[in-house]
Length: 248
Image 1: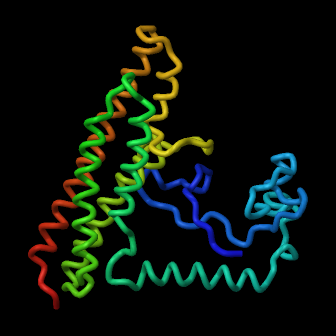
Image 2: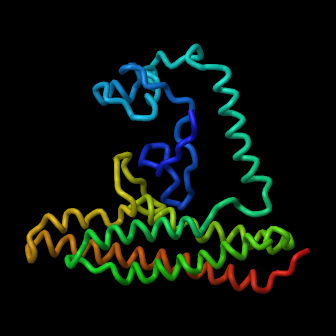
Image 3: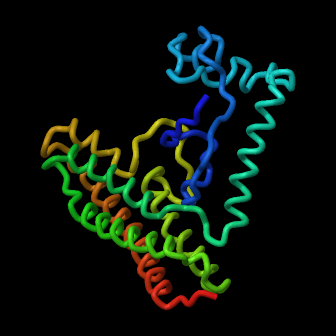
């Protein structure tokens, strides 16, 4: 089966997104669509998942034993994991695309803006996110122009900057708690900090609920603005460093 990447859903395995650490893989070697004998198909009443049948019926049961492993698939999956780990550890620069991250966040913010309409103003968030996406594009272009040939000291600083940009972007895109808490393993939309907009839109204008949720959203908007400012500061530092960096 060809690899088909999708946005990460919320699950118990994403324990570190509040710290801004992204996830890469969820499940490999899933079951074929086979008429209802996978865990996903059984839980969904046999509806299946479209491209695959999800995990086996034995997943997270006492029947999840070594005989369920296909040696060829296990070797293939191990090679994939090893290649990805090697790329992260052996490359001069972290293989993270801050431009793609910033643009993805901006798309989701535009979706919330359209949904909010006149009930809540997110224009300040959009403006700052657009600025961030522009800075991220400049930074990514300079990295691609040969920054991996910089001195070891500069490379260490650039990796720290990439990490400093990605952490708030991951937090904004995937969690509504903070580094000291943990979201429940329940489905939630992109930029879940703005999820209360759904409640606001269903409340009567001028009602107690309207003012309660608006207050919550103002605080969350401020938090998003702060996170965007943190990422912007890191990008500005990175652009300044790349402007001064001399190749070895």
